[in-house]
Length: 424
Image (cartoon, rainbow, N blue to C red; front, side, top):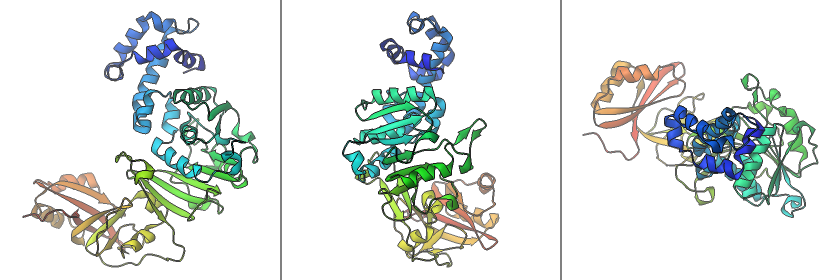
């Protein structure tokens, strides 16, 4: 999609055309919808200098992306504009709002006083700057792609945030350390061949982004959740964030934003429909003097920590909260004699713990009359789909099988939900 075709959608006539397309019908029969649009004289009139096919493509693209965008942006997606890459790379709304809330609590005086704007480098379609502006933080986005800049500006206008946010086209590598007292940067992690995994190949490169953050009064860098711990700045407080059990990102906080622990796991819950301030967020912080988690035989309850806890290397802290112990020092499962529910982990009651044997496990599943079997694994080489078929489970009950190893020996734990009744 080119800028002229996108700009045509921002006119009153363009918005009317977009509003007239039924997203369900477009998804069900895109060819019929596109054909109807090609015959619509209103579409051709959006920009007589452009081919009708290009305008139709722009309309269809936005309709499809808005439908997909609901997963990240909820109802706001119906008013927003997207590019395919922009939507894929954009921050989920609940994460952006969580970070914006934390940022707004510790604004530098130059920003809170209205004398300077925060800088959002590599702002993309504007997910993060929209969240900051929504908290009343003045923010300027910078991006190198003209279409992306146009889309971000359209989103600012669509959500009524032009009083707090603006976007300009520019090279983030030319931004100086003192240009913004508050800096947010989400380095581009895609190149001509797709996703980039080496932080040195980010744009701007990780060392450049880190230097800018370290020299700002306050800053936040967003990184992929799998970024190696060894490349993280010692000046930063690192936070691994998950949403409903899916690890989303690593946020590095600098300066006045680096509150609390040097490492934190944060679990957000979108399905609850709650805002962070209403209890949909849970934290686990590093305890420097804690030491490694103890290792012990299986106890009554199995704990499966959230991916944010695992990736932030805070399993020992999680186990300590429930007087738990690891089954193996290299595996993130831990067990305890007490059950404590938390967003930071899933807790299950252990019914049976034994070395892995398909024959024995199949017999146990049948004995518990289980027809619904959830299989989880850590450190196991067992093919879970083949195991599911081999179990031939049938019955009214539900069980969870956790596959793991202790040393080099495979084990299984047959579990049920805490509080589930005994099978008769």
